Image (cartoon, rainbow, N blue to C red):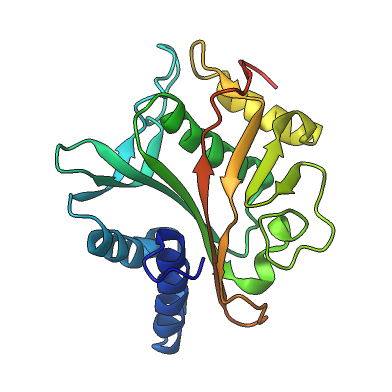
Length: 227
């Protein structure tokens, strides 16, 4: 991840650096997931020639006719010169109210669906917040300080695999509840990712950390309707 122009590195370092700056300008009380729009949008604009849009409807998640509520959306999309989706990004902000593993995995599944249905070229997941609030990831391969990762993730060389069948029953239930809103939707039995880029690379308790990983597509994975 040493390449200066690596998208993961730019997002991780840029977002964390911006948050630290804003915090020292006494604007920490404004921080939220929506507050990540400014640094994320600016970084994407500098990396890609096409337009960058926020909160775009997910093209592969069409709810059942009787289901109410707003459509599923992707946080950020960078378009290519033809107006097609080139890059898609989902972001999560860790606050005093902890982010659940179900929320994170559902976002990752939604990104994988874009790749599976050839709606986007690359997908990234960004999670940011106070370093001390990252306990939800600390026992998986997604956190750089992980010593004894749980069985839901495996690392081989530069690839991380998350076996969805090994998720806790409560997490499976949460994912299945979301899946029930969509007609004939199938998800993979496992998700694949690049090694995350984290900034700062070391854990400093009272500062901001951003972790970014790329979602990969494995066409050989079996797809199912419920976990």
